[in-house]
Length: 129
Image (cartoon, rainbow, N blue to C red; front, side, top):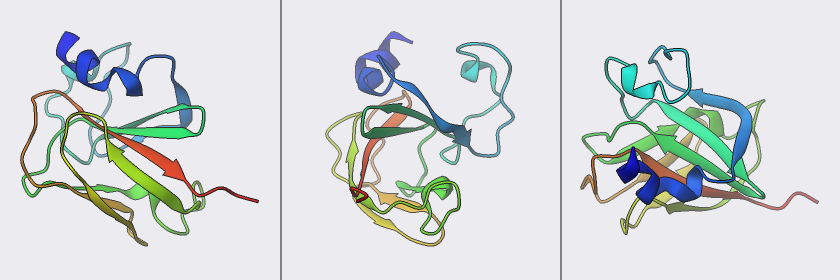
């Protein structure tokens, strides 16, 4: 737990829940900090928090190809259809490339898993006028 908070504290401390808690196929075990009780955490298991204008998306696993897809942030998604302005990687120095598609926000890393903790991304939306 200490390693995760050291790397991803920005996505945890002083944050609030977002409109949806997360996405992915893993059935959530009830209780606080219960993610470790899941049989297996995979990259499609994403949890969301927010702080001010920042959305944090934390993946519970690392994909073999280093490409994360966040379906909740797809273009035209009725729950969240805002355009994304920028995406950054919180959990290390890995550079990311991203694009928002009809399938989701696709984030491509260099493919190297930087640590054994969860993997958080910092997302900013375009301003709405």
